Image (cartoon, rainbow, N blue to C red; front, side, top):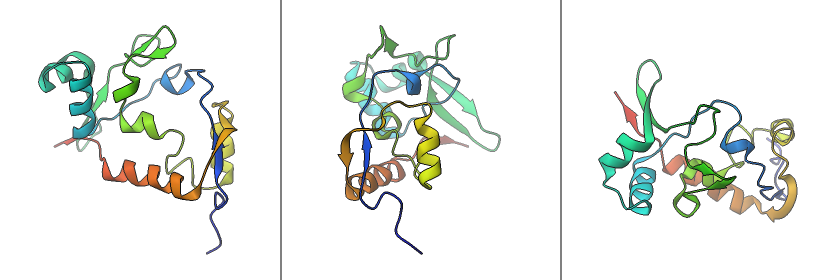
Length: 146
């Protein structure tokens, strides 16, 4: 197998367009760690956080915990164009756009760039940094309810 397409790194710098935080319907699946961090960041008890800010998504054979969305599909924590919980945001948000399906190949990366104007701009992330973000997603699995 040849070298991965991001062997020499990839550039990304958030342009604050908020596209990844809304516009289209989607899910921000939460891990146990995410829930604990968000609840603490909002000074709430864990269950109160889930009851107030989350929804249970039926995936067929199992269910997952996701943040709520507003009627316009924006994340419930997107307020005046800014993330209200940025300092304790979920791992899914923290690692974007360095997600496995976006990093499958150069074409996937460029396709994501059609929606995200920060792709191929700004800071150069090394292969090591990119793989650390990928690993942190794998190590921080979303909550699955059977």
